Image (cartoon, rainbow, N blue to C red; front, top):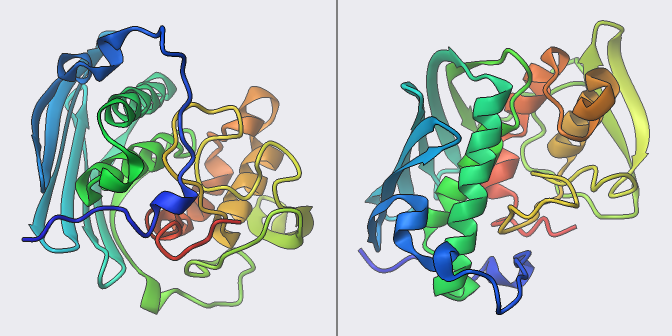
Amino acid sequence: MKKLTLLSISAILVLFFWSCSDSDDTQNPEAIGLETQQENLFAGQKNIDNHVITYKVSAEEELHFVAEVTIDQKTLFANVQYDLETIDFDGKDVVLAKEQKEVLLKLGEEISMFLFGEKSTDEFSMAEYTLLRLLEYWAKSPNGYAYPKKKIALHNAIKNNLKSRNEGVTCIRKNTIVNADYDDDRGDISEPIRVNGERCIGRCGSGCGSTFTIASAWTKDCLDHDRCGRVNGGGSASSNPFDRECGDEYFEASDDYLFGVIRGCRG
């Protein structure tokens, strides 16, 4: 299988910056518990804050990757086919505590720092990219979310009468006004929102102040999810929503996390 890199993505990557005096520990494979790093396989095990995490992403064939992340014996699985733009999730309805989700983000940050320390962005493999995007996506689930067995396919994006729906990957541009559509206990809501007007609203992933990201996709489904979480999360949750009201918006944004960057939704 020929080597897969992110040449089409590198132009819109958001890079980490750290001083030359930083510890070399971030460039040490042991720092992230790395066990295998091959062209089409990235795997390891790490203990963070007394939480044991194992991670593995392998290529079944070109543009087809299987990812498995286990934290404290709770396993999340994803089968990603980039050519077909489909994702098969299976979390066996496990529920992660907020602390466990924060650990997933921390692992993603540490892996990102390691990778940026050893290679340039155009050398990132698709296996590495897939793991980082899934870690961030899984860490952003609403409070009490049971990770289901479910399939998402872009070409079958559901269109129904609800304002909250999977709109596929619809790119949006920063500093434009776009309606955020979601539903909560008030019913169907549609609100005009300035993209990137508040804490990078509309971006698929962590907020503006995050040090963990390799790419920024800006999409309609991520805008819907952000707005739902900020309205219903309240307090500190508004910038990193863990709200039960937003489970459908969260799932509808899954394809945006993985395919938005590749589709060029650079904002």
